[in-house]
Image (cartoon, rainbow, N blue to C red; front, side):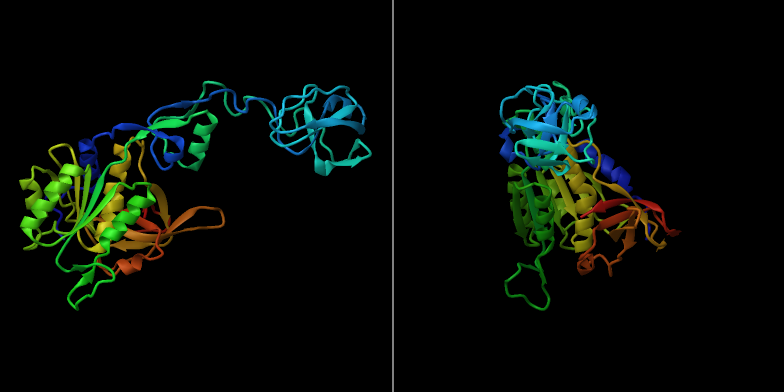
Length: 404
């Protein structure tokens, strides 16, 4: 297939990136920030840990005294987690300690309960006991010093990052505002799941895949619309969606057919076409433009494999960048077996990702029966981006991978 006049995927990515606007900032309670993108630096409120912290349930004592041969020691009391610090009264005493407690004054070592015998108010060390200074002690400031950077602006706020922000005393965080996203599928042939369907119609599935992908990435300000192949209706509906949304993701209507009205309608609505068509397979007809207020408009081809591939390759990385996340969403993957590509265009090949005994990732090809065969995508992990052919890429060839 000729590639004359078509841009490369890399250039398409750069052109999208050059038109994106950084999302504004909002401040939300910590409990509502999961999945968001941090727009401030988070620094340590105090040393972390803030004190010499007991790392095992057991007894705490003076390791120097134990190394001199003292093996039977009197239990003086208990140092519980969250209780004020106690003090060792004598070197031949020990204090029962709990995980998370502050180390008692005069103690520098913790012996776990498994390495002691307790009888009649005394603890006897077993021969296996390790008696080196600060054994089983999480030293103050060993994780972070007060004022040191814990989370940088642009961090994706998953469970660990939320916990770190909480440890820094944060009740609210400044994060990127989520974009309002309109998902639009076009076509008279589309019928909703559960509704009666004729032999010449198909189920509306692309929009469900797009919405699921957005939700999977923590995006929930989503509107879903189905618009018939009617230019007047398309114009009216897209005008409203452009007015109320930051991003439009359209599926179908961007190719060369009689009823592919989307590019013409968008132009009439003041959306500037940035590019139309990419030298890739599947998904060559992809369209991208920007609206009068900077709205990002993605016109994805209607064939389901093309829709999902273009969504993951271009739309999701663009949303991530607009929310302030540095870097991409791709990874390097090695082919598990030779792959022959005949197409003179960049080729997106569905794969399953497996790991060998050494833990290395391998991408095993799972080709579809054309861009309409979305059934073959079940069980796959994503796709790899292979250079234009014709060529045979050997086992171990490193390619760029994208996960669904």
